[in-house]
Image (cartoon, rainbow, N blue to C red; front, side):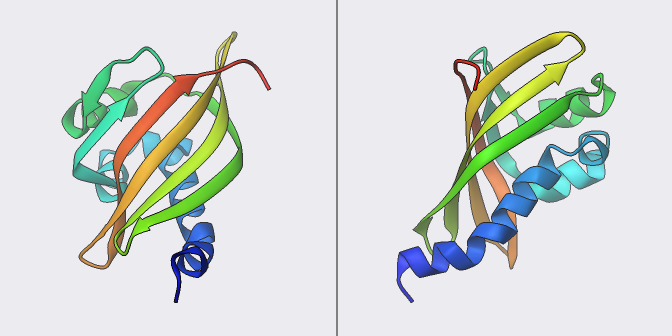
Length: 126
């Protein structure tokens, strides 16, 4: 199977995992976050701050709820055990609205896909 075909088969699964990672129930659960996010994951947020998994496990469950609208998903398979999920997001936190291009790397380890890198880059409203 070529890389494009493999990515097409993985696409719905990885998009579902990406959406699950930012779902409110997941963000409130240290256990679900630890299940979906690789122990060596690095996140670079829209302000350019780099965060490791442990910081996310402490911060996210206590964070005020946010609404996230996502669209224009694309999945690229970079290796047999590595895929990139790209999409655009609109984050609503109270009265503050921000837009970003997002990119996550998902690695397959022990028969399970986990996010190992996530980056958000601010963009114009869409």
